[in-house]
Amino acid sequence: RRLFKKSLDTNWPWWELLVQDVDSKKSHRFLVGKPHFQARGVACRGTRGYVALPVDTSPGGNRSKSKKKGKKSGKKRGAVPLKRKFYYLKDAWRVAHDGIEMEGLILEELNAGNVPYVPTVACHGDVPGIMQTTDWERFWHQYHPDKPEEECPLKKLRHYRVAVEEVGKTLEDFGDSSQTLVFAIICCLVGMSLRVSLSGIQTDRWHCSTPRGLQTGYHSPGHQCRQHHPCP
Image 1 (cartoon, helix red, strand yellow):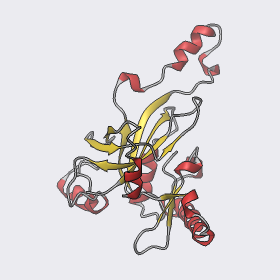
Image 2 (tube, rainbow, N blue to C red; image 1 turned 180 degrees about the horizontal axis):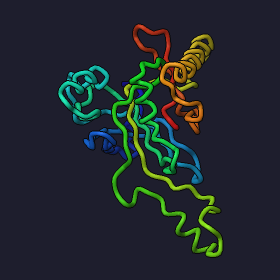
Image 3 (tube, helix red, strand yellow; image 1 turned 135 degrees about the vertical axis):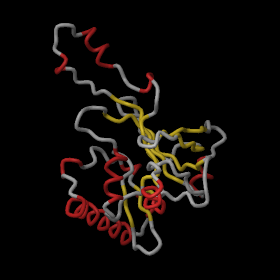
Image 4 (cartoon, rainbow, N blue to C red; image 1 turned 90 degrees about the horizontal axis):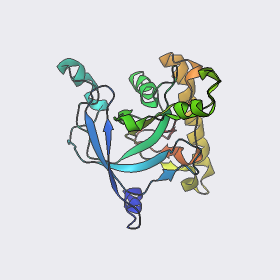
């Protein structure tokens, strides 16, 4: 709540962002203010992290609690209304190449395998529209007509959003509490080891980028600490 209130900067535009779930195709609306994190420079994937408030909610809309119900009723994952709470929403341009999966798909596998210390996916998917995919390769070939397509160094990017249920604090927010930070890192390592042993996910499917601004720690009731990286 404190972070969301801080994001309501009157000198910054406030937005309603849509996340169209990749499975259910249902669009979830979120209200956001100033980014909690924003990547610097132009030569990047434009990653931004928001503390987000969902518009369409239900008191019982917790996705993690409705998984079994969804199987019995035939509802698709992501079709259940979201809970009335704050979410962490990441907006970025993901690499859309063969063999590079959506971050949310991997996190869903971890959630289904009950792997601890990873964020709980609420919804995720590509932003629809023809203007949401880069076309750098075409311009590169205009300047390099004699070179084969395989030599193009530019990656195809697609606009992507993922919302998770945990809103944590940044590494800077830990302050002088180094013991808590160290324990959070231990939890993160435990989660990564169980990720392979319990879920069978291969080690070549690790995060390809973890900027410091999107590394957050979340204290969950009943658990000592959870740390996650909501940015691929």
